[in-house]
Amino acid sequence: MRTQFTASGGAHSCCSAVSSSSCCCISTAAADRRLNALVRHLGIEDSKSAMADISANPTSASNGDSVFAHVVRAPEDPILGVTVAYNKDPSPNKLNLGVGAYRTEEGKPLVLNVVRQAEQQLVNDPSRVKEYLPIVGLAEFNKLSAKLILGSDNPAIQENRVTTVQGLSGTGSLRVGGEFLARHYHERTIYIPQPTWGNHPKVFTLSGLSVKTYRYYDPATRGLNFQGLLEDLGSAPSGAIVLLHACAHNPTGVDPTLEQWEHIRKLVRSKALLPFFDSAYQGFASGSLDADAQSVRIFAADGGECLVAQSYAKNMGLYGERVGALSIVCKTADVASRVESQLKLVIRPMYSNPPIHGASIVATILKDRNLYNEWTIELKAMADRIISMRQQLFDALKTRGTPGDWSHIIKQIGMFTFTGLNSDQVAFMTKEYHIYMTSDGRISMAGLSSRTVPHLADAIHAAVTRLG
Ligand code: KET
Image 1 (cartoon, rainbow, N blue to C red):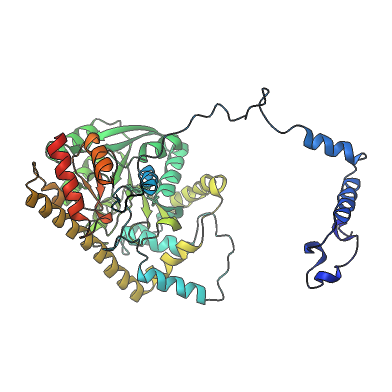
Image 2 (cartoon, rainbow, N blue to C red):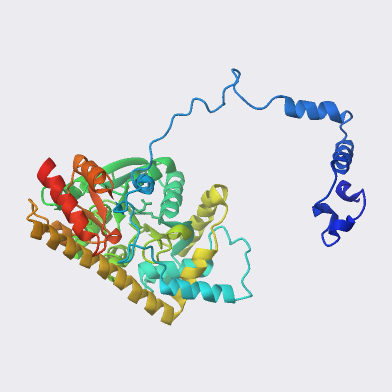
């Protein structure tokens, strides 16, 4: 059958190069004829009244208001909202130390050279297509991601006991893991550190888990509250899920030592708790991908089960590409394949299947020895720049004689310093110095440069001396 839309003839002479369906000069009369033909085709007798019915009642509440009139304005996100406020500030001296996003010494976002090279390879390859990926994502990317975090010689990988699915960066991977656990794991409580990344409680609550906290940080020492952590996990119900930051704990910058990790592992295993690692900063804590994966690897090496959510936002600078992975280490290959089949049922109605570009960049880098080596060098340079910012800020505060012990700035690791500044001091620094940071006193060291350190040190000094 011919379609109704081509019934009235060929292209007009004015636009013979285009097909009749996209002709630029179809008259209103011709369009009406086609519409009428469609209405006849659909069996609607009186096209005018049918059309009148369609247009007479625009959707609205019974009083004529918007059906959404009752919707209250939500507050901005505590982290991403800092960038919203920063963007509105016209001051030339403004400084965004809110979101954890790497900046160069010039204060500019950085696209890694290896990422540019990988993208170039991808565009130059004419065999690449834009088909849907499978529900679990790019197979090669998944395999390489599991190896990156668990170690390429990890027996669990060799025994096919690990199932990995591509996720929408770290957040999406945590969410898929959370929803899988809520559906298929017997214990619905997840213990998260106090404090933790602000999105954790929301992600896990909306996944269907019940969120509790364990002590982690001691404000008095600005270090780990190891005793509190052991007590709280020790009194968690057997089987409870435990969220652990793989390295570079956000927001505190305080990690357990390897010895303490070993202690935690024994406790977790003896109580049959289920570890769920959030690895958003592999390579950012020490500059070494292997050193930063030690916590996860000691768990993955003991034969027990665990989950790991990985993000490539920070360590490959792929923030907006939303590339991540969720791995579940299982007891047997058979369990792993059944777990994977259920992960697909979580993913399919959520976003169907993940995007192809970012995962292809990561796979291109991870599988090529030269690109991989270059990546480790660029990653180390980012980590080193952050470490040097710590030293510079510490020195600047010492020079100013700012009251207090600021040694935690150089002791903490990763992207953030948990300064100990309170919300009033933060508000003062934003108002008077146009420095933007989260209200808990966390600053992103990656957003700082040699040029901006004096400005930040002046602001901290003023905040501490005036509002101390
Ligand atoms: N886990 C942790 C611990 C984390 O800090 C972040 C991001 C994520 C997961 C998720 O990152 P993703 O971009 O989904 O891979 N943290 C920074 C950005 C944010 O809040 O979204 C931050 O704390 O600034």
